[in-house]
Amino acid sequence: MSLSEAKAADSHGEKAVERKSVYVYEAPVRIWHWVNAFCILALALTGYFIGSPLPTVPGEASANFLMGYIRFTHFAAGQILAVFLLLRIYWAFVGNSHARQIFYVPFWRGSFWREWLHEVKWYAFLTAKPKKYIGHNPLAQSAMFVMLTLPLIFMVITGFALYSEGAGRDSWEYVLFGWVFTLFPNSQDVHTLHHLGMWVIIIFVMVHIYVAVREDIMSRQSIISSMISGERMFKDEDD
Ligand code: HEM
Ligand code: HEM
Image 1: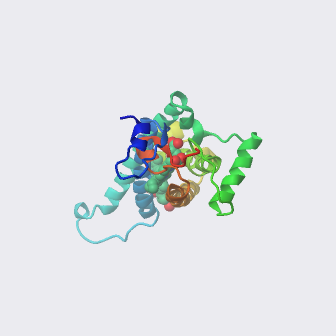
Image 2: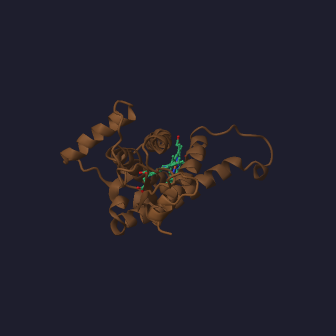
Image 3: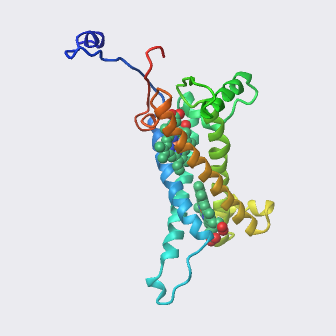
């Protein structure tokens, strides 16, 4: 039975509704999204304790290795995040146009900022009708670029620079990232900036999850399931 026949021939007298869906987020983008989210969860939790360590406890060191496990988790998750970020950058070149959105802001395009303003009003409950986008809306795109893409690159660079202090001057970490200490000769400054970067990302994540749930309820299009299935479904007849 075709969709239109199904619509007409519903046995309970109710009309079945046909909905359009578009394939937006390719598998590598979705896999990266969730791997990245779990890495950030692990990094923020363990990073917080690296910055504010637990008190030293008496007893045999091998029985009290908690700080060691915390640091190991941080460094392991940091390296996974870095590898997936590189793969994600590769996918920005070979994937579809939506895969490129979080890597730039079309700063000189007037229409981008007009639509950006419309999104600000929509999120502030100042306008009643949302615009529909197949990929990210302009406000999301600019927020992701400024508050996640750039901070992530910054965290990887400063993270590996800090790691190189322990790994030594003949380590690949120092060869690639030792220049950070030319910019900030005091290692404490790098710690503080790396720490500050965490709060920028945490603020992004809190707002991000709120708006994802809000959009899912209010904008008449699928949002959260789009980052799982890749498909964006439009729920209004006139879309
Ligand atoms: C979202 C990403 C990340 C977050 C939220 C994060 C968070 C943190 C925080 C809060 C600290 C404590 C800083 C302080 O107060 O001294 C820290 C330390 C550190 N992080 Fe990260 N980090 C991230 C990514 C990375 C990456 C990619 C690496 C690379 C392997 C890394 C390696 C380190 C190292 C080596 C330290 C210093 C440990 C020490 O003091 O001995 N981090 N991180
Ligand atoms: C550490 C946590 C998270 C971070 C850093 C993060 C970051 C991002 C980024 C960068 C994108 C753009 C993906 C791309 O184009 O490559 C995105 C999209 C998305 N994220 Fe997250 N995310 C996180 C957690 C979550 C959670 C928990 C949810 C679910 C409630 C979620 C729902 C979504 C959705 C629905 C989209 C697609 C938005 C759209 O439809 O345009 N995210 N996220």
